[in-house]
Image (cartoon, rainbow, N blue to C red):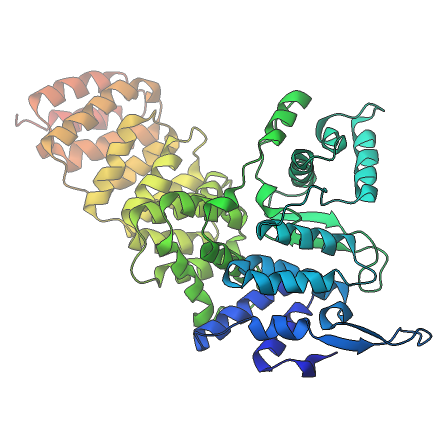
Length: 499
């Protein structure tokens, strides 16, 4: 398979590009390992070898010998992976070398539509304008037919209208809307399933997963919000936003490495987890884009401990804003959706991050969970674990103050009770604010045993904080209590004699 034509480093890259539909990502990982081992690693030898002329013969041997560039003799999947790989690193390559490779690929006697589209897209990025759309006429017709079946009418509308002209704008809308269709019909993730045109590697039709960064027009793909109504949806499609454009090239490359690492089923090596150091190079907005591209809210819980271990091993520590964004993206949705006690993987991940990043955890996870109207026993149990085992007195007071701004529920009462049991030192001002909350929110808990127990904790453990004004306010609150603890509460309040 022509591997002997390449030097040692290039041969590893070629093997990666031949390894399947994830070949581009594998080659990128190989390149980074080579660069870490030898900083002056270059792709020049690889491109030069691929462009060398090679004598070839037809498969059946009936046609005369021909001379073609070596790259044309490789399978179609290799060429597709190669172009995707070059797209990711083209900023590091001389434009003349890339143009020469594309010129060689144009000599292919049977070009695949997808490879042709990737080549045109790469030429665009290098500054060569193309008025022709990237999709073929056959692809356009097939999608038009599909759109008519979906809307149940001969009249086409919505994303099908993007095929009514051959302008570049119509092409942008078609790609964006095609991505939206894939997102609606499949799970929400960074992968878009496209059916490849023509025969790939000997099969009539093969479904291929193309990453956000490998598609027909990466810069025109976007994360879209589903909008009811045809006109509004079309308006959204006319102005696609590419979050990927907000990231520098080296961060885009790291995103792909992290994504491949998160998808792997094997143990992570120390050298692999070094890729997370890129987080310290990101500003807050870039961290948000990175989290979206990695689909962190959808990450399986069994992957969380490995990821959190890598984050905790970073040096220096993450900034407050970076840690808060990661915690919010990675954990908040999982915690809010709990309907039963948290899994061991989730508990381990949350507690480990909370121990090292308590302030971001308070503002990015604990606060939003307390504010959520649907907070229940699973969430309260997890928050109690955090406040009791991971937060020192200063942050426990911060969480207590957070409860002053929200409407209390039975679950919130559990968290407050747990905070009071740890007996943080309350200033006179803070205790007064807490007493005001007891009085104002108490009427809705007249039959709540949980509220009565919390009140009993206040009157016994914080009796020294109760002033005459507090005692007067609390007396009226206790009069409304209808639980079996009412007499105990009144007796505890009566025993507080100092003012």
